[in-house]
Image 1 (spheres, rainbow, N blue to C red):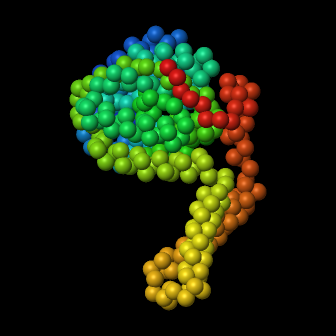
Image 2: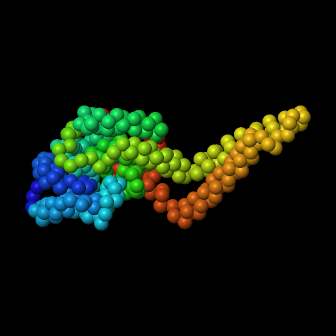
Image 3: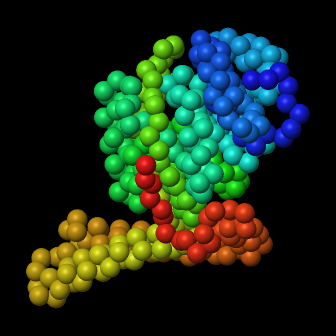
Length: 334
């Protein structure tokens, strides 16, 4: 990569890093070679996610050597979602590429990702078809991807692959926090953006250790509930709370009518039966769910009445390849 760059970059490469001191310089070298084959101005943004090793020193040295390398430093380890959000905020390119800093993603694949974006996709996801990880991680990943495909309708083989390319328009409508980086394709598909998936090379980890364990699967499933709530019910909370509440009320009424019938037929007193208390509990909780659903609808109405900028996220710009009439969740294909 050249020592300086005067023109505004068209491509921004965002790389979150946490305790990857041994991988950073080799990654930079391979990245420089890959971007040298791209006939577009580029910048590289490393996000130091509160590393406690020498990663910060290595990154400062790289930035001093190459003006196109920029470093964003977080005060403490805040997680990949926040690191990506910080990098996206600093990125200036029309196309943003993300990859991990552990040398498992191959920078030589970047031209292929850019070609797919130029062909009309809004978000291109890498697919680690021959994933070079331990068998436990591969099995858990397959379970996670299968559950997500079924529940969201977004058909991708490798949803959580960090190797992706985005049009800038997609990033302006993402609000990442917690671990929602796992579901960026789902959030983008919900907005109506066009997704594509291409196989990419994947290498074994050479330095350091993985930052994720088995608990990642359970955290991911909990985050999936958050995503389903955000994508299906954020504009119609009464459909979730009210529907659940009405079901409880109907079951409670049925139970109480059954017990009332027994009482009228002269059976033993029903006041000591646990079923009676279950019916009453369902009626109370169901009524509360409906009430909170109505309250949520009222608050949403006030918010949208005061700020209708949410429409900006739903209207495709003239320069975008996204069809304004597309409303269903797209599927990915390689």
